[in-house]
Amino acid sequence: MNTLIIAFTKVLGLAILANIFVEGGPLFMSLILLCLLASIVFIVIGFMAAKKSVAKARKMLKLTVDSSLLGLVLGFLGSVLGLISAFDSIEAIGNPSPEMFAGGLKVSLLTATFGLFTFVIARIGIMILRLTLKPEEVS
Image (spheres, one colour):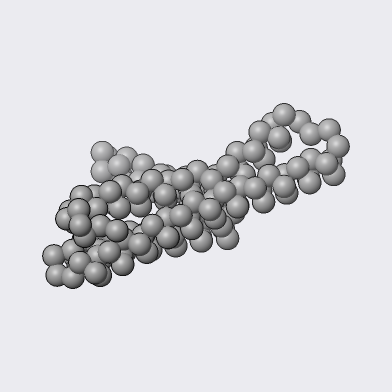
């Protein structure tokens, strides 16, 4: 019985994450997810290359910085575009209910939150990789 409850909790958690992903707008959330995955791949490659080739580790460090910043900017771009579309629909309706207004704000902030999450995760990896490289090796 406990195994069934744990399995149901995992499935329910994935369903909630999938729902948040879709609510935030599949286009921008997918682009931000690609930036997160690219950042993680670049960090892992940087760690594997740190002992063999310092130049490759530095290159991966720079690529991680770029991909994390791209995820952050895409998150805020999606948020701004979501706010514009929410205000357009509010303008068309005329007098929206507070629940509708709060729902629109929540949806528009999901992309910014995911972009910030991507940026923070990549920054943690960047800091750790910089700590593993010698000070004269970090640009």
